Image (cartoon, rainbow, N blue to C red; front, side, top):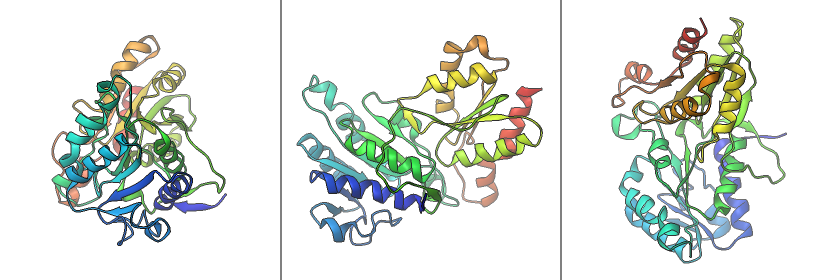
Length: 324
């Protein structure tokens, strides 16, 4: 199987669906003439023209609203935010318009739109450009939230998001756009709402998503040297959450650690912990533990960035605490 970059997998997903459906369009800052801030949309303007690959002003609320209106009128927009930190300006359109269209119309019409772009830290970008928002959007009924960790999942899930009739938040990472991964040349889709076991194990379950999967898998690799066999689950979709796969794993391993870059208060890790105590309490031989980003703003200094983020050493420490 060939290997391509994360950005190329995203591009293929959009191009394949846009070739099939004239109603699909891409809009956002620098997506056209500049070929995308991260070169995800490279070459798309040449193929599809300026009516379907549209450069927007630096006005997130405005172009998100245009996208929502277009979706309500039969088009299928893909709205790219240069970063979800900037999408805070557009959150009214995402939460109060896109997410509520189906309910407020009594099911008469939907809002098939994808909001995509990077979320989370990307090195020394400071407090206002390093925030993780998956848990924010996952709190909103009416939104689906996807956060893939590799090119294969990214392509299959983005294709599913584009053809979905509900609004989808598709969270990426600036630090993964150059990642290489195996992606088949033949067409495929990955169903929204299904987690994936990336590494089987018997002693402890480690759950994560997005670029923190690298941390989880590295921790599992190191734990193997100490004869601790970790099962690593990639959530892939945050809402709907595939709690069934997590519960099944915990029934086997009896221990779980959730690695989640977002702030600990009200995090995805917190939700998983609640659902496990409801659905798998009798199978737990130790408390559900989590490794989150620090409960503070991300600072610029590199040593503080390292201190803020989850890393394999932190995960290994927590795993050993619940193992012994």
